[in-house]
Image: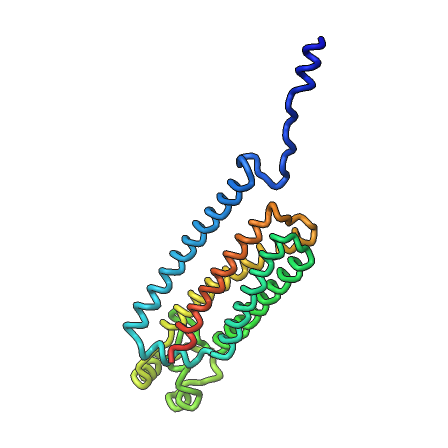
Length: 255
């Protein structure tokens, strides 16, 4: 009995389980490395995804340079520049949030995440204003696009089109508009809406994950040990910002 008691007394105790360590990882460093590798792999697939659109832009831009230069005049460069500054500032606040998470500065983390969210919503608000203008002016991709609308109401009335009617533009008038102007902007705005719309979807996804982080930060559930989640979201948000930095000059600064 005494020997059994001594053996039991001398048996090593199980180490306390780290609540931030998933059961399938050996230690925190392995979990950190796996999370970073997974995030970088995801970002590479995102870059490849957008690369197809950038290639399409390059091909059509080389084939129809005049069309792109003419259509770009209908974009609001000022709003595009403001959105660029908004996203650049959001990158700063997101990087600051990562640092606050690593230092377990709860108030700073909450503040910087809230500022990043505000910038994201501001970006989408400005983009909504731009999209509303394009819809109002009929600057849309697809078969319903009409080059004749760009000739102005007087030109349309001269060609017998009732500008107050919702009837489709006659084919003869459309052909006359194309012959006069030499271009149709539907192609450009098809690429514009595809690229900026897809980017906007990524901004919405960023809002969702940053809001998730903000809730966890308010609850005090983000510590130094699991701050990699903030770091990974920050990497994603920087990619979103970087893509817009390419989109802005390609679409808004053509002229």
